Length: 312
Image (cartoon, rainbow, N blue to C red; front, side, top):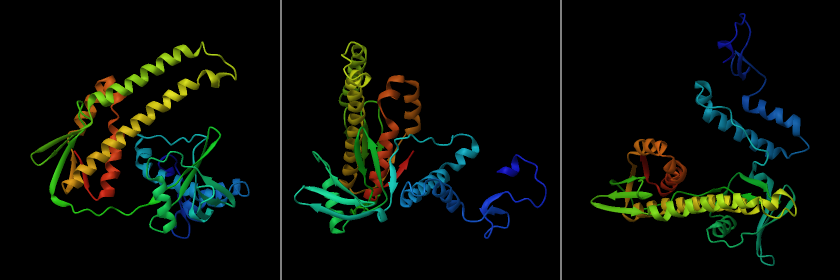
């Protein structure tokens, strides 16, 4: 966009493109390779090139996704925290196996041995890792995150879409209600998922507990400084986030399971713009109801089940 801000004389090139592919280009290589060379020249020898390549791909893809917003002025350039998880490709992983003696999944990441501890695995993590070993599920570009002295592996799996006997003519209408998290209409039948008391009682209760702990934290014994004083505060902050995430996963899963049970081929989320406008005017609803997060979870679960989602 440089030509929109400066008066350039004729013959000056101004386009960020490969000069071999575009006569107006000023780069000696592709745009993606140009940014990769910048980080490679700076961090080569300190960080594995596989990580640099994955970081470059992630930055380029996020920039292309938001470029229209940048140009129109509705978005600002993204910021990244120092503790952000760093990606790595499959080339960096080797020797993935299950160690019977340690009862843990093991692998080498850039020749560094790792053991995975799943703890109380109430989800499908163990099953997914077993499917990776058997070749049923493919492992994709994953992430490693360092937090609170611990190392977290955030694997990404390529899972095929589920095959269900769905009928395109069967349509379900779902609305994110203020009385119930979800109200679903399939034909003449009407279903509700979750209750207002279940969600809007527990979350404010956690918030009130957090306020009380904040008031009482100044009277706590310091011992090792600020960390000990704020220990209970940080615990309750995570408790609220974990509770909300768990409830939204449960509600969205029940919705998709209900659609699959009735062979629904199309799911319509109705009157969402009106509900969002109401939520913005009421501070309590906007603070506690998590509309957007629930819609995101419904969207990817519907896509996995092969259900067409329409947001009205």
